[in-house]
Length: 367
Image 1 (cartoon, rainbow, N blue to C red):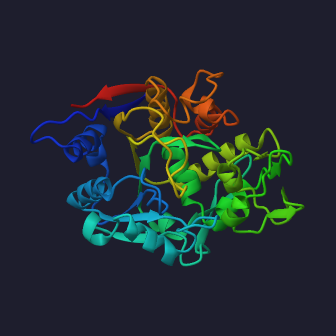
Image 2: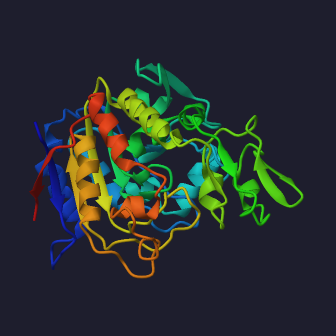
């Protein structure tokens, strides 16, 4: 059966702002049917890498937290630490980055907990009995919550095609060793003739994987964990996945991690499709949005939600002077045209096959 996905566009007028619309979308989608009374509710989102301005403003999170409190729950905002070098690799830096980007108890009305602790080692092994993962390593605070809410910024992604609810849940809730497990299926390689020796890959790597000889880079696979940050930062596209299946394996592992997070407790999912940048909010920059802003989506089904968002993006015209407008357009799909080595459909197909939801949906518009 098709799942219901609720949607509101971004048109407003006097006395009807975007936060009012988010509130109506949440209620129409059924958030009030969840028993929040005296229950801890994890609101999982991305606080944004310092330098990136495409992340969701804290106003959106406050709207969700306020609704949870109104329903008797105990909300907190959460994310896990990152593998790569940046502003969110440990809990102290992570909280500093969140504060820099406007997230605080004062601005959001609830506390912030970094789910996998100070150094990214505070996790729980959650049995999932998947094809690729037997026990997912999930941040402890995420698993301690009674109710799970995902609040996603829907955008493109250099490894998975797009980042939406399922990536926010699967990759985002993995501890540092969990992220390492998901990424470890593919190690990047360098096309020597394209490498200009700029060393940007070395600066972004947390594991000293890029090694330079005679001004050219190669990747030490004994050190590399396969996180793919070097691929995204290379200005000459000289670095790419070492195997054609690595992105597909990443998608599958990520979906199994999402299943570990969601199984056995109530969950609810919200996606905001604005500032649809071509790459992840983990970047310390954000390129121009590839399509116009779209709107607010919510559903109990994260698969249907991601499918609806992807379809909405692909139905939009391209923005001028973006990665999309300058791509070759060989695949006639916005995500595939921007990142032709990715396969976003494969992730949703696998998610559906392991019972995370359905790709079939009814889009219900909310004024």
